[in-house]
Length: 477
Image (cartoon, rainbow, N blue to C red; front, top):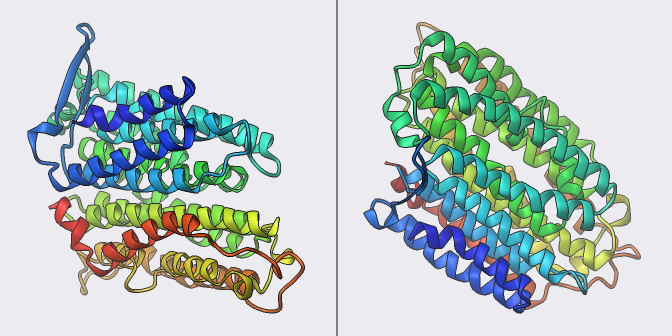
């Protein structure tokens, strides 16, 4: 069944190229995939989700899909939810409908293929597939300095992918297989000296794809320039590929190597949370603020990963990372989608051009407010559950007599990021929606029913997981 989930968006893309109605085809494929994704998450342990098709004998290469654990199921669920919201949000200029909707479908297919692949070659290849439409859409249809942003993201992610490829090939040569399940079964056979070198390559490669400080400067300009569906899919879904790769491959296969780099990782993730957080406060446009906010929140997920590296038996660290990956993906997609609607209503995302929008667009203000509160970590929404679990995971091995260890000290410093995120998000909300109306906002149109549907889909996901985190945590047992 997983091949259907992965290749249905590609089939819909081909149908659109053959002049099938672009919006109808994309929505139909996304709705079908949402149903399949929910079914997959609910029954991920069923053998019907395993698939393998031999492609080459030597070296052994298989188009293989499966769900080794619930983490894959959660990532698939995140992908199909955000895909439908992104497709529904799409407002393509006349004459470019096929490219807009087709690009969203290809990004979705790449993310689904990467999360579902159990063969290392296709795990890597599907991610690279998703990057191609991302580059094209930013370069052709982005806002602002779109060409500069497109080149920057291409260079950064291209170099990061090459470094990652070197690490994956080294890992494959030592385990003698491309089958990720067999590689993990061979954990413990890799020499500690080699582990340190491979771990460095994977941290830099995956870290660049995730926008780990200081390899992060591509992300905010790219998201600020990208069309809304591309920003929603890349920031919300595709960027989780690097985190998923660290949890799926690096941590089980390279425990000694990663522990050697634990202290530098702690310093870098604080760069994400504190340095980028302060940069976010200084932003003068809503799209730039959201882009930097997305980079900042990656630091919290890296904190859970660091807790798992420091204590591989930590029962909370991996669930915390996966839960926050899901929550962040949903909330940032919601905010980018609504920011696009603000720009279409007012013609600007510059804070100096906005104000009092809540008077003419109360529904937009209410829904954006929920997204903002989720990003801050308001109780009852999924981000709160994820962040609390991250903080708790760092203190699993706390020993009062021994004092605080480096991960726990990092956690205490990282908590200040919660204050920083509240400052920039509440300031942005006040500037956009409160105060006297200005020329751009006094006659701005409110959300239509069609505009509210994708936002409500994402908000319901945040509320469901926020009010009952076990909805996802039960999948990770």
